[in-house]
Image (cartoon, rainbow, N blue to C red):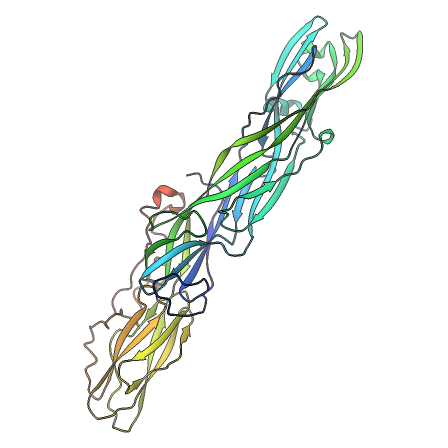
Amino acid sequence: MAVAGGVSLAAADAYAGDVETGGSRPASGSPNTSVGAAELKYEHTKGLPTSIETGFKGLSFAQVNVGIKIDPVVNGGPLYSVEMPKGALVEASWGTDKQILLRAQNGAQTDGLVTVRHTLTPSIDFKFSGFGLSATFSYNANDLINKVPGSKFFYDSKATQAFAPWGFTAVDTKLNAPDMKNATLFSMNMNKLPDFVSNNVTGSFGVRASTKPTFSYKTTKVFLSGADGEISSGASELTVPAVDGDYMELMAAVEGEMSVKGAISVQPFVYIGTILEKLDLDTDLGIDVFSVNYTVPTQKVNFETVLVHIPMPNVHAPARGVDIGMVKVGGRATKTIEIENSGEKEAVMTFKSSDSQFSVPSETVTVPPKSTYELIVKFSPDSASPALSEITISSNDADSPEQKFKVGANGADVGAEDELPEGGERGGSKGPEDASGCGCKAAGTSPVPGWAGLGLAGLGAAVLFRRRRNAA
């Protein structure tokens, strides 16, 4: 896969909204969506071949044949670039089915940018005959560069076009061009030709050309690791299992294509002063303009493979049951229990108690990333008998949308210390940290050396790398 341009990634903002979303994809902006942004850039630094050729034009004793290529301007940067600095967004969304839907989020931004800057590079065949002289000379672009004063071609046209990521709809960048009289590619004195001509002919020759090409870019495919299929439009969706971690990471490879079409006018010109130092012609031959429509073979645009980092909520119920103690009938006791959100996205939670003697807050609670919530459980016994309740936490945690733990009083058995709560995982204390100091469950960096160069072929093996928290 061609690698051109740098890439980076950024975490997205967390959002608020309804918790109950079921198995279908929630609307963008709900607590059950999160976005990772990948910065993509592609640069094409080579020229584009064309079939443009005028054939020999002019008078019988002086004729010129010109071929034209579309090339980058010397020291002017790439021929074209495609950039999505902020808007190449991958949206993850989920319900309660422990599946995550992935899509390329279009959004309303237009911060994608196609930039084109080009020159026209000629090759030339010069045929001179008559008056006892006969010769044909051919010069490619490099030959002409070495002979043209200033060592550059004069033509320079550029344009930019903004577009909405991901660019699944074609983005047309149209370039303007000068009129023909101001569109000289180069001119050369006859004394630059071999002695056979330069010793016998005075004058000059050159080429004028003008074109207004349209560079049309379109994103065709987005591949995401761990998912079967591809994203080929803003409506496409892929499914992967929910990630048990503070964030999820996946690799993305993006393909596109650039096509070019336009019309070009080419005008070779020859000025003859004298021939054989005797015949004074003083003739300026503005040869009839040659015009033709042209297309350039479609060019593949393969962005560098990127690692997309998507923040996730990660809720942890207590790792073991909670004992409130002994409470007399008519009395009241409270217990503050820490609920952790170790994730990088805010967690939205609701609570429910299976026994009315134990009450929990009825409102929806939002816990910021890397924060805790102090859940207050109130116990008002109806009798002196042992009392036990199962507290259910419903949240936007993708892989554990419902977690339970036990709360007891008056001698109730809240479970052995090594027993996991039903439907939940151990929480409270953190698992071992990795070398970077991240106590998270998803990998902090890609475990594949040189992931950026893997290309599309590497995606099949690069599936949602993560580390799970050890049991407390």
